[in-house]
Image (cartoon, each protein chain N blue to C red):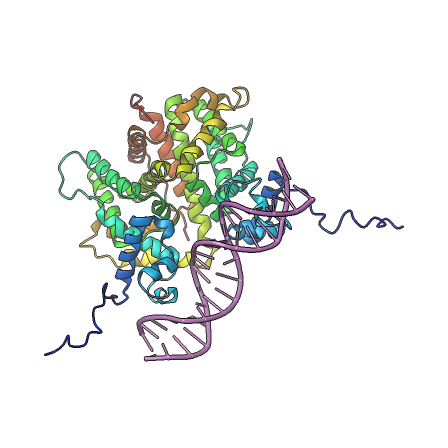
Length: 231
Length: 231
DNA sequence: ACCTGAACACCGTTCAAGT
DNA sequence: ACCTGAACACCGTTCAAGT
């Protein structure tokens, strides 16, 4: 009986000690429940039953928090270790997994477009992609530059498609573009007019796959220029 | 006569009537002077000597305003009409001009990464790129899909390089990545370790040029899959 | 119609002070 | 050291009311 004789311990959520990992985990929870835009320092502080200032002990600022959340999410990417099949298909699978993780959280995916990521899970993705490019015989110098573009395309298409169904306004954002295109005369914009809706059909699976193949084919066949002075 | 006998007209800056174009133009001014992050509805209303609510008559929301500002900026892109030279070099010039316009205003450039643009100046860029791809003999179906990726890369590299020197924190953001990379053991991340700083050297001119050539070569040589159901 | 004051419901970040 | 209340300096957007 009286298992509650000491009432001090274990209040309902048993306010846990603040740690960076705990903060990021809670942030991810709030994001899944309410969307990234609601993951603010103040909202998060409330969730953790403290004041916003306390978070700054563990997190530099909001941007860094969002980057950490994103890396947390990237833990779910299936890197296809030891999978079978041709390297190109396995690469396609890894990038597809990366895309679908971002896809589920498009507004966080924007972070990946705008911030330089450097978390462990992101680096694991980079390593996996590099391994597959090597397996495909791509020279290391070309692979080093190709991996960025590959992940850029994966991210951007995830943002684009994912954003579409998230907010109701996005449907219209697309319609605005379609309308703009329809309103153009073939006189001033012959090429756009000629292509019509094909220009704007959005990144369906086969379009994304085509973009990957373009990049792979191009990167395999295009020699890198000699190294320049940089920085 | 005496049309100016009433002194009510023309106080110092002669508070101009609100128009959409005027609002956007002022917004661009504020941006050039203080950066995009300071272009808020409230700040802009102050500049225009009115209340924030008034702006909503002409502008849907902040995102739409930013997109309009960006399109305004894109008026400066040199489309190289009637220029001489090989199509590939002229395309490189157009994309370079597009990049340098965004480069000057990296935080606005992020808008281009995250929003579907549809302004007249953006469409002029698309039309120019399509014309050059056609001149280069790229089949229309491939060109329609390539133009997006080309502009995506141009935008992303502008954001990356431009963001670097804008805010002081960005220097360190890059250093964080370099450190992360250096901290990785060759055991767990052999490919990253082998490539080292090459992976992270940032988009210098030759690297961007290489990416364009990769894309062009790939898009020229990669057939499009048959059209799928979309929407 | 066009414009606006005021209100609603929030923000990020810092800092002096506490434990 | 770690944590925090309170403050500073802002936000976007809506709406009822005015002209």
